Image 1 (cartoon, helix red, strand yellow):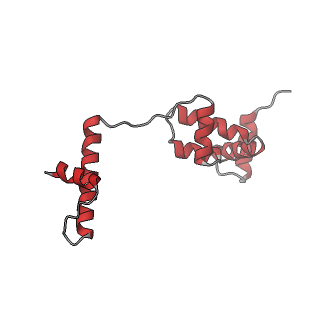
Image 2 (image 1 turned 180 degrees about the vertical axis):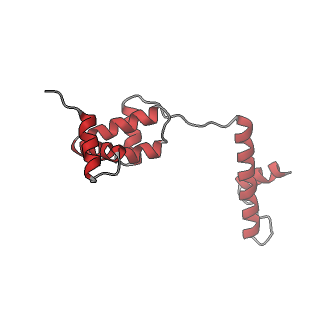
Length: 128
């Protein structure tokens, strides 16, 4: 005896318990995944690998801690892409950070340049 799922879904919608077929399917999937919670992890990994969701969103779908999810990916040999800036961009960001550190130090000392640390002297020379 074969089951006609379409017929059963349509019957559930007609009863008024569900608004539409999508709601029936969503409820069925949620119930199924509640019983087989390990499949949430597999879904999350697949969605992450196919770039459909972010790493954070995938960990939420799996229902586990972000760092644990990252470890699972690592254990399975799944690479986590990292956006890498060019060296020029990184150098500019470092330069800007160094300037901020020096300016912050000068402000803390009421405008007096107390360059007592060798690191601050290096920063100062880079500003020249």
